Length: 253
Image (cartoon, rainbow, N blue to C red; front, side, top):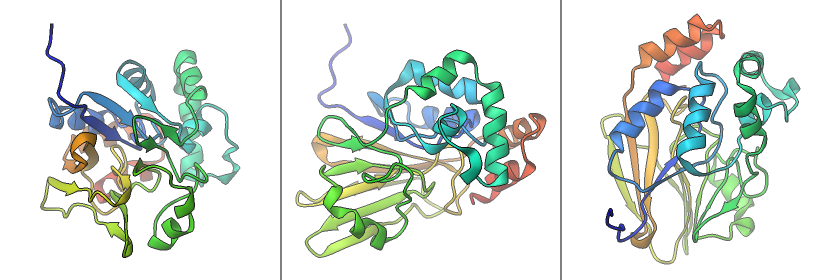
């Protein structure tokens, strides 16, 4: 019998967006560093491998909330509010998903989803589709944050926000020349942490983003890893998806 770990270590992902190559790089990079996987939503949309990603999530993710693209690709959201590129990708994904995988997306819970002393969500605790981009955005919803640590996605920007007695400050993303940064959470703090996007970063860094969380030690480990970008782009183009989706992966934008 394998020994029980002294404490749980979580791999926290968000915004995979059907990018199989990025996910595989993250899993290899994080190998041996976690006991359970959590996801803040948007398994699908944009990328060319929705079925591979959803099947993997069904088998390996301990807890996941739905994202706006999950809703759209499962037929739960009106595509009127999507821009033309996102709408085209959602329609392609709807046609491509197997019935079982589509039903899995339809059944994903709405965040926030409370877990063991923390929670996961997609947009914000108030609205799953709300973007938390600025300190002002976070100050507006501060009364709705009832966990010391919350993980969110949706913005595709790694980092987050930290409350202390002096107010709210931004947690910056990793610089392009760093692969890892450890954030020790002060005992009197409240944190909204964004692992960044696995499958389509939009913070100027094309590397896949993720984080590790060790609750007992109140530690967040932000990481970035390069992946087989060329293969992910070729798959997008071969699938007939909008070429802009392939191009933006190079830019991390």
